[in-house]
Figure 1 (tube, one colour):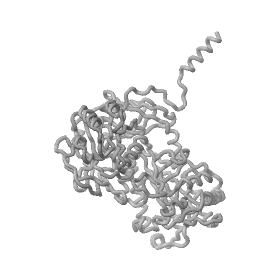
Figure 2: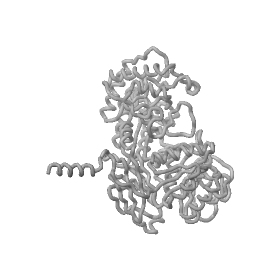
Figure 3: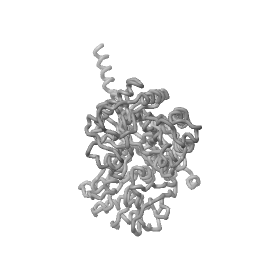
Length: 602
């Protein structure tokens, strides 16, 4: 009897899937996927767009494959794509006639094709794109959306700088064309072309802009099918670099004239920090503050010494930061970037010098750690932001040696500009030290500018992340402050945060370390979606039971959500058919309904 009972219990136990934070749902036999076709062309635009696209698709947990246009199986991969899938042709030229014929047949039969830039010479691709004639190129200053594709992106002011957006002057065919975006001169930037039973969307770029336009790219791709689902971070991370840091003695006219002769120290203690606290409370911000010992850029030894005044500053502001539940991270002993002689030329351009050795860099960081231990008490520091956003592999090693608990290096978002030593990043494991996370800051500053907000909205449109940084001393720099006093700067900063929160109230405030910890828990997550009749099904694999999964869901052709099972949904303002989905458990079932035609035209 006991043997039978034991056998029954064991049978039941072995029949139940082991729960290790992994969903046991059977994956759908059919799910939405993408195919990226690329060439061996060494053209810089091709290479840059390949990196941008594959990084974005991987970040958004989309199911995609890549295929070289000359590979033997590229034709088979095209044949496997269905009408709810998307093919992206990431090359200026398609040389294979077989691939051209397959793409023509695919789109003509109802397939969806996305072209990141128009082919310059291939008549078949130009025909599918709806291009009648293509001419010279010119920079783009402003982009106007004919129909808002994402909140805040109805008008995009492009900061050309050293990496301008370049478009082609072209003429489109007159039928079956819907222009999505155009520049100030009326040149089409993105458009739809109905081809046979299918659809082609083309972007008119001849040079690829930096990561700040990735959100525009992804949201345009989302317009192709009945639905398009991406997985987002849904987070708001706010850095204050150089805080705490040395507060100068004395005062300056821009402070004393507005605050009755206040000193620097009085202003930051009585005005700046209390107002920054008020901003955090009203706009739901959690600061990640980065401690800096001094503003010198000396790399000389012997070991450095902290003044008693600097220790008092660390003690006061360090405890204030922690008391108000913000995070305290590391910026450096001083403002010398952790680079050695192989970056001497780049450092010379900004008036800096290279460190002589990794040991010297580590010694300076050890001095900072000792000062923090003495003033705040021994504690863990998880975030490191490099001075001048410049950092080498040796510098990373020095940081890890002194702060082995570090979980993130935070530099800048991806760029097309190659600047030696500058830490440009994509969100994910650091390429040199994968146990540490790369957490780029996407935007910067306290002055409200249209080009800044376009960048902010585009990144939120990309991966649902607002990652921003400021400095306490921007007020003292006429260029960075645009000659505004603190009252004006604070009003601008309020306007930036209110604009973000009004459009995206769901973004969750996080410190840098909180963001990284959640990313690690969700790193193995896989997401699959498909549509059948009037229901979209989202299936998760490797989902952490404690963490919801967040998505953007785009519905086209007048579809809207009727109800959701195992999920919550929020409609985004200013744009049609776009939702934020909070997936609670697998599978998520989203029931759809057709919006009346008269409402679609509003």
